[in-house]
Amino acid sequence: MSEERSLNFIEEIVEEDIREGKNGGRVHTRFPPEPNGYLHIGHAKSICLNFGLAQRYNGQTNLRFDDTNPVTEDTEYVDSIKEDISWLGFKWANELYASDYFDKIYAFAQALIRKGLAYVDDSTAEEIATQKGTPTEPGKPNQYRSRSVEENLELFEAMKNGKYPDGAKVLRAKIDLASPNMHMRDPIMYRIKHAHHHRTGDKWCIYPMYDFAHGQSDAIEEITHSVCTLEFIPHRALYDWFIQELEIFPSHQYEFARLNMTYTVMSKRKLLQLVKEGHVDGWDDPRMPTISGLRRRGYTPASIREFCERIGVAKRENIIDLSLLEFCIREDLNKTAWRRMAVLDPVKLIIDNYPEGQTEVLHGENNPEVEGGEGGRDIPFSREIYIEREDFMEVAPKKFFRLGPGLMVRLKNAYIIKGESCVKDADGNITEIHCTYLPESKSGSDTSGINVKGTIHWVSVPHAKTAEVRLYDRLFKVEDPSSEEGDFKEYLNPDSLQVINAFIEPDLATAIPGKGYQFIRKGYFTLDKNSTADKLVFNRTVTLKDGWAKK
Ligand code: ATP
Ligand code: MG
View (cartoon, rainbow, N blue to C red):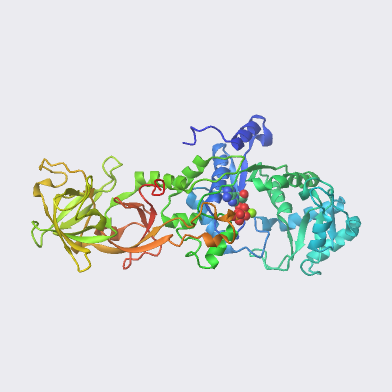
């Protein structure tokens, strides 16, 4: 479908650049995650955009870990990020780390000091904030701003050599304390942080700030189109200033609207809280908007790519409805999932006129959406079966095309049955249903001449296997938990997970991990990563229809 749609505004820019022969027509993008959490669906949008641009214009995409913040970063996150990008179906040209450029970035800082464009400042964070002024009031220079080049070089080296404690000094760019853009009022380039880094170990105790690492890394890698989200618009002037003053490769920054989605949160900081405080079962909990959570839930890479394609790339922020993501996975699974039968809320049904002890093997195709059905499986049938409790009504209203005394229905892949009676316990709950079947109505060789309106699913009692089935709902009760008053966690949906035990047809005991199954009439399911032969566990990916649309 990507070939049919019109160009997004970034593609238009790229095509214009190619036409003008900019960078020799070369397109080189990067995806720059900070390894401080797992990737979420918002990152998928950025991944699809960055890798998509390179694919479309015969370019390349670097995977660059933006690891300039030693305290929050970890190799666990690096590994998960790589796994998720690969799973989404993208290949990076180079795996790179901003920390690999620390020597170069340090030399860039020295170069700016030599040009009289950077100085070591001993002020505290509060003093710097006050001296910076406000958007309507210019900032004021302090006594450190006029330090000599020699003194700055010496002090900066001493900072690097560990002479000072955290926070004692910073290196700042000397730009314009009266600039209307607050980011240009002598921004901090380096801070002191005596912390162990997951790659550089204890080599460094000063670390560059985002603004003095990101554009520099882009330039080192000769990135042609550096795409980021709208919050970085005010940083662009600084991005350009550093590149110009350092006379390095002129990468350019372009901004697009980040993805926001209803009924979830998308900031890694918030997702980390949910994990740490045990509100969810880890980063890959199937209710999480993370790539790993969606994968465990049963989402396919194609469905996520399709979602990113449909939401498009815009210059203004909006909030996308979760139901669009669900629509995309439904469309995909409808085409690919294998059909199976599982009874989630069972009641026993006895076919009085079916011979006791008899079993027959019926057949059902795997996928009716595909010519030939993609093969099929055997379905054992016998006198006693389970059906869904809701499929039988003792006193049925008109247009109830399921089972009740005197009502006829087809058992999927099997026979037409007619309801006769039911047995109840002391509390009035139905414990057993009795019916008769039409032997000549077997699916595929039906000569009964009878047309019934309804078809229900079932599982043979002596052949049934059991499975734990996890039904998921929205993680939050409100559309935009981040914009509500108080702590966002107060808006968690207490009913986001329902665990039930179900009877499943025996073929599901050998379900394939990662494959989507449609439990007929019940939704799409996939094996959970913790499923074992002794204890099968299925996650519901999505219901067959949008249950919320009606409400
Ligand atoms: P978070 O706010 O969730 O911590 P982040 O921006 O700090 O996200 P990074 O690891 O820095 O996370 O992001 C890597 C890339 O993904 C960046 O280029 C960023 O702009 C992009 N990105 C992050 N969140 C979104 C989003 N919701 N929609 C689109 N792109 C995003
Ligand atoms: Mg970030």
